[in-house]
Length: 325
Ligand code: ATP
Image 1: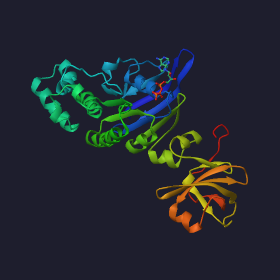
Image 2: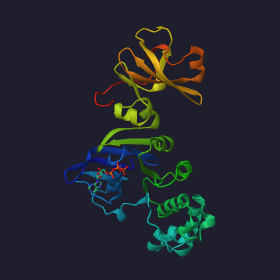
Image 3: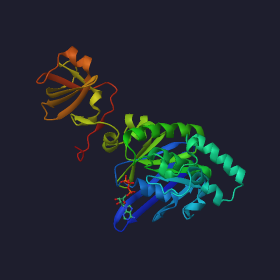
Image 4: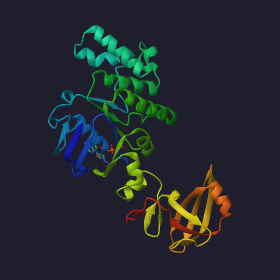
């Protein structure tokens, strides 16, 4: 295992930022720390990096107890949202920087910089200044710079957070491909569930300083540990005391299934191939249901129709928590 965090606690004054965090991050994978703003993701990443110290607990990196090691001795590379580039140095010089301070031979540096610029598709911009690059290109340069010294772990704190949606999407596809090429253990912070689901091999869901669940995107989506994880990773609705996904509900116009809950369609919205319905049940629940357009048409649904709802066979269903509406 590449990174093992055990019994980690961190307070800022009276505020508990991390509460007994235990996480194991496997070697060679792309792991996302996912959760709402203020949940403690960056604090955890900074403690792994050695930029911040936990109050109690240990951090092991590649089998070495790194808890008290300074950042520069941990062999980690980082990229932050607003990366501090050297503005007066060319792209190539920025990438070479870490190797130059380690006094590597000149031709080795030149070769490595060439290789890295190819990897991040910036070869043609080697002699530009960072100010002459787009935001997305600058972040790719930052990644090349972090990779230059061959870190055993790469830590990314919302690396694409400041970019527009289209560039973000391109960069996340690119990061996935880059990772498939270089396989360096990578941990990235995001509050965007779609980004985490698309890019990560494994996701650590963090909320209010605690780890809610660790798993693959499929595990978290299909077997959420609790209501929080379920609602953070996708749409959730409530039917008869359980939480489930709106597309995991069987909807009929006749009471065909035992235990079906009767309701009436209060709103119908067509979006592309799907139809989103709000159903007001006789129990007083307002349930969201998503069905295909074809299905809606075959049932002849309209606002005011009487319908019967049951959780679909194989649906992910968890007991509804009182606190979450
Ligand atoms: P975001 O997605 O908004 O960056 P996050 O999950 O990364 O959120 P952290 O940055 O880890 O959250 O912060 C966790 C909590 O700790 C926040 O409430 C934040 O205000 C607090 N915090 C972080 N750093 C400090 C600090 N140096 N001093 C005091 N409080 C801090």
